[in-house]
Structure formats: C-alpha cells, structure tokens
Amino acid sequence: MTRADTDRAPEFPSPPLLEFERVSFTYSDGQPGLSACSLTIREGSRNALIGANGAGKTTLFLHANGLFRPQAGCVRYSGQSVDYSRAGLRRLRSDVGLVFQNPDQQLFSASVFEDVSFGPLNLGLDPESVRERVEAALDAVRMSGFSDRLAHNLSFGQRKRICIAGVLAMRPRLLILDEPMAGLDHAMRKDLLSVLDGMHERGITLFLATHDIDFAYRWADRIHLMAAGCCVAAFDAGELSENATALQNAGLPLPDVVGLHRRLVEEGVTAGGDVPRSVRELLDSLTQRSIR
Image (cartoon, rainbow, N blue to C red):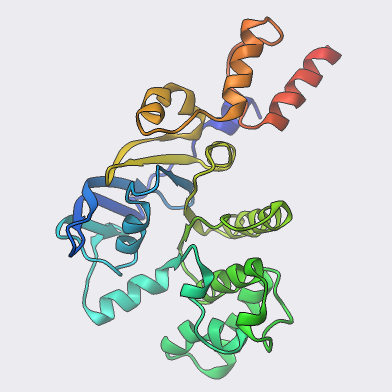
C-alpha cells in the first residue's frame, strides 16, 4: 500500500451519518453559540473538531445528540431530521453517545455498575442483557473488575473511561467526545487513544474536540475547523497544509511536523511530496532515506 493510499480518505457511498445545515443558536443571556453552522460526519470516519475556546465546539456537540435544539437550521441523523419528541430523542441518544470533558458532569450513581447500566436499563432491557452490556463496555475501556467500585473514588482518567463505558453500553453508532485527552498525563492519553482505536475498529464513528493540532493531524480522517460558531473549513487530514490560511485566521498553528518537514525540504535533507503525519513518521522516512 502506498502513502497516497493510506492518506486517501475512505470512500463513503452512504448518506451522512450526522449533518448540520446552517444551524444557529444563541444562549438566553445573548451569548452566541452557533451561527449558520454546516458540517457533515460520514459513517466509519474519525473526525477531529478544532478551534479556539468559545468557537462553538461544545455547543455543536450538545446539538448533535439533541440536548440543544436549533433556533434556525436543521440537524439530521442518518438522513432524517432529528425528532425532538421524547421517543425520538431516546432513539437518537441510543445511537449518538456524548462524553463530556469533565467526567464528574456525567457520573451520578454510587457504583460503576449502576452508572454504566443506567442507559441500558432505560432501554427496558432485561437484567441479564444489561449485565452483558455493562461487562462488554467495561472490557472495551479496560475497566473489567471495577463494576463494584465507587465511581467517585476512581482516578480522573479512570472516571473518563467509565463515562465512555456508560455510552458504549448503549451500543452507539457515533461516539462524540469533548476534549477526551484534557487532564490526562502521557500514559493515560496513550491508553485512551488505544481504547478509541479499538472502538473505531469495531465500526464506531468517532467525533472528538481537541486543542492539540498535532494529535488531530496524525489521528483523524477528517478535520473540521470552528470559528465564531461556524464550521469555516472541513478537509481530509492529509490536506491540512493546504488549509494553513484558514488555520491561521482561526488563531491555530500548523502541526510541528509540517514546519519541520518544510525546513528539511528547504535544506535539501529530504524531498518534497506528502507531508508526514507525525514526527515519528518523518524520522522513519529519514531513516529509510539514509539507508538507501
């Protein structure tokens, strides 16, 4: 498989899984949230939402699973406008799971089992099915054996994984995570990334917000750039260099590896062409070049 093959975004013949069409929303105190925001998420893709604080990322997520309702525009899921009735929202939230940045906003039961089982119980599942879902979800986030533990006695990183397990127990098609890496040390970030990759391999579409442009560049299939409540650019991650002006206008830098690669090209150390997606990938290419 060539580099071009690995960088090319997957083909998605089906309709968008999630679609925002010119969605606007203003908070009751007059604070702007979204402004004619349009955005598309394709099933099976990994998506990074980037933008400065106050750009509207969290507001967009709250619309994605029906916690907020557009004041103008339309949100569609699987090709259909979101149904804001109680039954419609229950169906939507069983398919679209949202994990908040702060796990303490999402954990409310005493034990881990009670917390993770809350969603499946609300679906009306029998106790055995609920237990199976809880065990599978905890196993997916590497928290098996924690079901009897008190949720609020766990570490910050463990509580984040319990929140993800609670959403996974609903068997969602789309998992949305607001700054999932925030507050985690390097080891916990690496572990959580492995968990997310495992979910993607099982067919779950991922959509997460991050301030880490380097992470977004090396991990995502698609990058969506928010500014002033609007998605001002959306592109395949491999096309990030071509969107440098949009990033700069939004107050965001290019990934470090892009600047490093450009400098090495200028110095004649390496050839031009595709920009590596990480420093490790760049070092590997330099090593192979030196061997040849």
